[in-house]
Image (cartoon, rainbow, N blue to C red):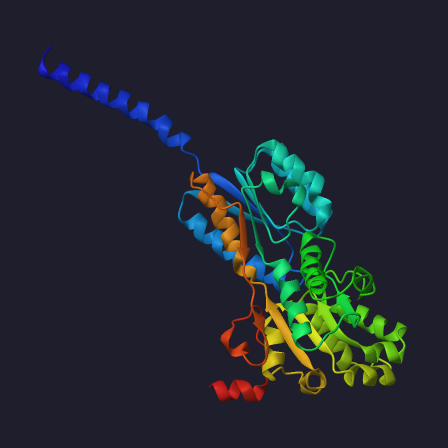
Length: 359
């Protein structure tokens, strides 16, 4: 073979090698992670959505995974989204904050589909063993910390307690479990725990918390209001609803007075910047009189940035790494004495004077 033929043969072989390599490059498709969260219906879920979008963008920028954040208006909307993912096989991994326990049957379908999933915050117990991991704050710890604080402040077995729960998901169940188990460990009887009052579900809503608190005052006798010195809300938004109700003109003055002079201990949770502003005494609406009437006000932390752990768990799993089955993030109690040590979420609400001082 002459030199010209050798060159032609070399070119042909090079082309064959290049063509042989092309299918490998095309087949290395980017995997997709779907991140499902509820709409930003209150401060905490709003912060979850923000953190999820920010971290999803970081993961996507690295080029190994395509991430998409999908929001839902309610449980039925989220059920439809999950079923679409299953039917269309449009995700290689799912990270989900379930709306509530209505998702149980759908989560079973997801588990049976073989698509790996991570649950965040609200855990559907029936499929917990099938999940790559469950990432949550220490919900039982919130209940325990609240009960312990009440007991340290003088609460005794049989005292009147009002609980304002979030919804029908695992989160309120665990918070109430931690709270009531702690009471049982400290001398309360089952009968005394059965007497604890609870409002309807607040839906984690400030406006609904305000309404339910107002309804409780309206339907309660003055003596019962005065005797109810221990209030456990499941979220800072609910506590802000209480403060807004007390500030409004919608409440009967005699009943408002009964509440304001009852030396109430108000325990809440999450870490909303607004409640931190109230604790600091710098909220622009000036809740100083309402806070001064309380015997105690505290908020137990529940960091919405935990969603980043959930997303990272799915990335690690798809990378073939070992992932812890149960991620529980510890909680802290925040009050006026240590609030400066904590960074809340959502907009800080400060007075003009405070803002000027910081300049």
